[in-house]
Each structure stands twice: as C-alpha cells, then as structure tokens.
Length: 333
Ligand code: AHR
Figure 1 (cartoon, rainbow, N blue to C red):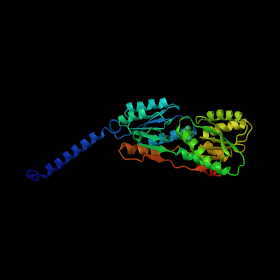
Figure 2: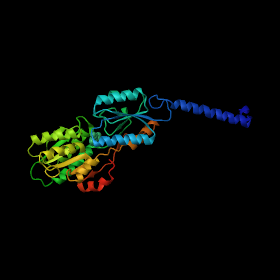
Figure 3: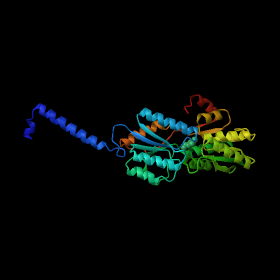
Figure 4: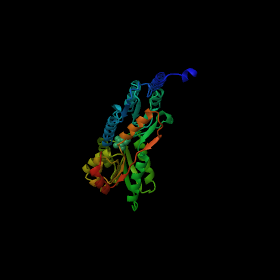
C-alpha cells in the first residue's frame, strides 16, 4: 500500500495503461466467440435461406433483404431453396459449418425443423424466422419471428366478402386457390377466411386446391375449377400471383373477372394492385415483403446479445379498387 502511494506520476500512468490494455485484451478474447465461434472481426455475417422466387412478393422480399444487408454493412450469404424444404435444411447446415454469426430464413413449410434448429442452437448460432414461422413446440430454437399475421389477412378477406354478400338470398359459390401445401400462409389464410365467412351459411367454399403461390399454378387450377363447376361466384386466391394466373383462365372461359366472378387476393404487389385498380380484382389484403430493414436491425441486436421480442408483427392494411388507384403511384413493390 505504502509503496503504491509513493509511486511517481510516470509509473502510475504506466500501471494504469497496462491494466487498461490487459482488461481490453481479456474483453476482446471474451468476444471472439460470438455468433457460433466465428472470429469477431466486427462484421456480422448472415446466412439467409429464401423460399424461392415463386411470386412478385418473393422477388420484392429478396430485393429488400439484399439491399438492407448492404446498407447495414452485414455480409449476406444468400440461398434460393426453390420451394424445397430439403434445400433449406442443406443451406442452414452449410451456414452452421461456415460459422456465420446469424441465420435467418423463411420456412417453406411449417413442420419438420426441430433437428436442424437444434443443430444451430448447439453451435450457438442465433436463428431469426422471417416472413413465415415454424410449428416447433420448443420456442428456444429461434430468437424471434418477424412477419405478418396470416390468419388476420384471411379473416380481413372473409369479412369483406361477408359485407358484400350480406343481402344474398341464395348460395354464393366460392373457389379457393391455396398456397403451397403445409406453408404457414396457406394454412393460416385458409383458417382466417373460413372462420370469417362461417357467419353466413350462404357463403360456401365449393372447391379448394393448392396453386403453389405461382401464376402458372393459379391458371392451371382455375381452369380445372371452371371445367368442374358451372357456377363460380367468388375466387379467393392466397396471393396476387395465383389470382393473376386465374384471370387468364377466367377470361379464356368467356367470363369477366371482377364482375362475373368476384376476386379477392392477398399481397398487394404492383401487378395485383393494377388488376384491382382496373376492376379485375375486387379486394386485396396486404402482406408486406419489405422486411429487410427490420431483419438487419434484429440481426445486430441478437448478435450483440440483446433481448428482442419473441414476435414482431408487420403492419398491414387492405385495399378496394378506389384505394388501389390512389396508392398505386407510390407503391414501392
Ligand atoms: O409467405 C408470404 C407469401 O409467400 C406471399 O403471400 C406469397 O406471394 C409468397 O409466395
């Protein structure tokens, strides 16, 4: 103690400097293992597994993620799974091997992720679900889920129809184009729509088939619907692209879309909004693909070990023809 008190000023400064360097060194060593054991060079690397390129929505989502990663200074490793779960699992395993800092993905289907998510957790790599969720009972397998409330989208579509058909005295025949089998938006939009229209027994779904969220799928399945059913009053398509494909089938069958058949879709991408503004669609429940900026923000937070909310819901609205005309000039996607 006495010795310490009698240290000269230069010696004291040197001692302080040495301890600062020592503490700094220890802190740096402690940090070097963040994000799955990757060396911490101050840069975040994100492995992102995208569903595919099935729709206008998906293209806009991919653009948003790539642009936001670049703007946030996050190095992005991107993989397109071509709508196949096995490709997504393979991509996630590659990201684990490469010791990326954060893994993000939009699961093509809801089930079957526990094993690979457990592998990521064991490797200490945080996972963020974006756009679509998984049905894993163990919520600790991922940090957060950023995306839309698909049940609500289906419900909003159904409620609009209930209002439109409230004075119908006879059956209203509805056909439904579902997204790909097992996908969260397909399951949830079906559920929300079905629950909403259940209040009016005149509203009946007479046919419901997957069109895989693609224009080609929508066209092909709508052709079958039109062949098999004499009277179709309403089409509910789980996305704009299937609705746009169905337009071709409806026109080819000599019917007027938006008049002979009421058309309700989900997404509100530019082409869908144009069809709505033109009166070919009648109503759209919005689903925003612009998730990139929020995703990058979350990646930075989970990488820094900060707590993030378990669920972050995207803000969305609905559009009628008049509203689409107004919104179109400023539509970003
Ligand atoms: O998961 C979002 C859905 O996936 C969009 O509604 C659809 O267009 C896309 O393919």
